Image 1: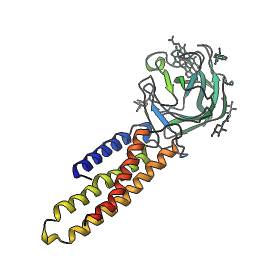
Image 2 (image 1 turned 30 degrees about the vertical axis):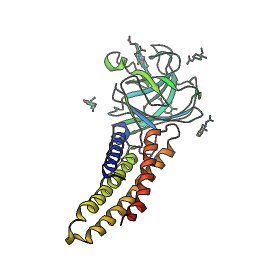
Image 3 (image 1 turned 90 degrees about the vertical axis):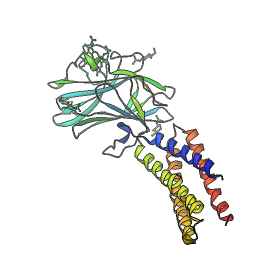
Image 4 (image 1 turned 60 degrees about the vertical axis):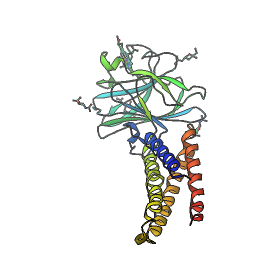
Length: 296
Ligand code: HEM
Ligand SMILES: *[C@@H]1O[C@H](CO)[C@@H](O)[C@H](O)[C@H]1NC(C)=O
Ligand SMILES: *[C@@H]1O[C@H](CO)[C@@H](O)[C@H](O)[C@H]1NC(C)=O
Ligand SMILES: *[C@@H]1O[C@H](CO)[C@@H](O)[C@H](O)[C@H]1NC(C)=O
Ligand SMILES: *[C@@H]1O[C@H](CO)[C@@H](O)[C@H](O)[C@H]1NC(C)=O
């Protein structure tokens, strides 16, 4: 392969790896129970986060996080199937109940609700709350219909009034905390940015590839090309070159394998272009190995 074409390909790969692994707030979060979700979004109001995984049969697993939580408050996250805003919100509510976190479901039908427990318009086989490090988290499993792909979401925080949730503030972000959520592509309408929660492993994938295809392999090629001319460096250049190419290739295989593993895990998303570029580069890189030694 011509040197400049090779450098061009490697730069493209570098840029695409870096762009796709740039970290965002919710994506770098690690759950204490090691749960992993396909997507997350930094909700632009009230400083909260929604993490979710959508199964093909419609089942939705979510984790809703409210950092900076005060134990005299309640939090809620809801899907509103037929409307936007609070009325009709099928809510997941949590608060600290005699010092233990407690979560339950509550369908909201009026502005004078006391968030009484009740069943929602879809089944919620699992709901629980966790309060740690000043953060309140609701974990839940929602059995949505598989044809539901975009939902209206609403979220809120308000004060406890004795044993029951009291009225939340009705100004500022407390009346703006609503929008849509695309469960399949992760797009939100309320300015929330979406990332995959698997960012850490994606960073490993990115770093391995950059070190291998982006650094070691070109370095090895440059050693061969430029050090060869110095008689004194003979045959040291050859060993250096072989060392760079071999270690580069091994690291590259590891980077490629983590990429393939990540891709196979995301059943709902296929990063087709990235995947194809990765596979093509890997094949070209692999062909390069015997090809190069044919030259000597
Ligand atoms: C103790 C229970 C609750 C009470 C008494 C309550 C009361 C109210 C009232 C009176 C308003 C109207 C404010 C206005 O005049 O504009 C309002 C708006 C709002 N509430 Fe609640 N609320 C409660 C629970 C919730 C929950 C659980 C959520 C979310 C899951 C929520 C989300 C909202 C949102 C987004 C708005 C603004 C948009 C809209 O009017 O629909 N509220 N709430
Ligand atoms: C949907 O799929 C998930 C995982 O594949 C499974 O755990 C769950 O039981 C299924 N739910 C329904 C209602 O079939
Ligand atoms: C956390 O809450 C406190 C008191 O309500 C507030 O002063 C502070 O700015 C909040 N911090 C963040 C990061 O939101
Ligand atoms: C939404 O509308 C559908 C169809 O009209 C109805 O069956 C369903 O009960 C409504 N859901 C809620 C939460 O009001
Ligand atoms: C506290 O939580 C329990 C479940 O753990 C629930 O049955 C009970 O109603 C809650 N108490 C209050 C005052 O909400």
